[in-house]
Image (cartoon, rainbow, N blue to C red; front, side, top):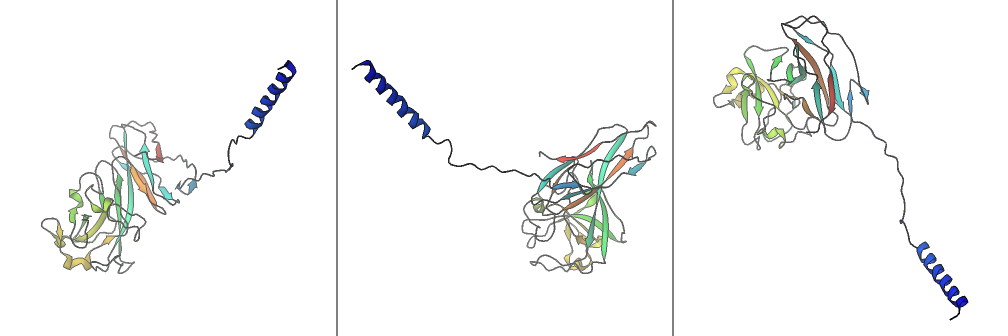
Length: 270
């Protein structure tokens, strides 16, 4: 074969390789979209980032309330959050929330129990963050006591425990409370899980942490389920608003210099 013929075949082979390479697909299609991010949590109605500086006059040995923090979940999913404070040996920061109790028509096996008279309600202020749980009735009734009612799995068939608030230890709800995750109240409240607080006649609390259900028409029941812990972690349910009031307990030996307390509401990694 002469050199001209060899060169011709070489060029044809190179052209064939080039044509084959041009026919290889790098993809079948392409889609370009823009992800527009929204944050579901607002604080005091501000979207994105809320910041505020205030001055709270407070004497040593006293407890003084700070600025209300209204935390709302505008999204469609549960959002775990954490409320954190800067450490300071001269000031202890707690957080309090409020809830409402009301009388209801009690019919076992039928839910939800309907409120009898919306005007006949009680307001509670309770510790949402702190080392120990505390709660007070804003408009108390003589002869009544506050209880934490810990439900069973079969809550209509098996009565739960009526635990006096003074006997509550640890976080609420208790881990073995069926309302902590098993019983679902999404169809009744915005708070699907949590702890129940009731206000009942003292004479209705029987031995063995049982209740006299013949007196149920006199009970004041929960209108939402609450959460309490010492680390400031909460589950925010869709549509839920959690109003927290910081409460500053000033040490008796605190100096007279201003004490700056930084409070942050952040996404929880728990």
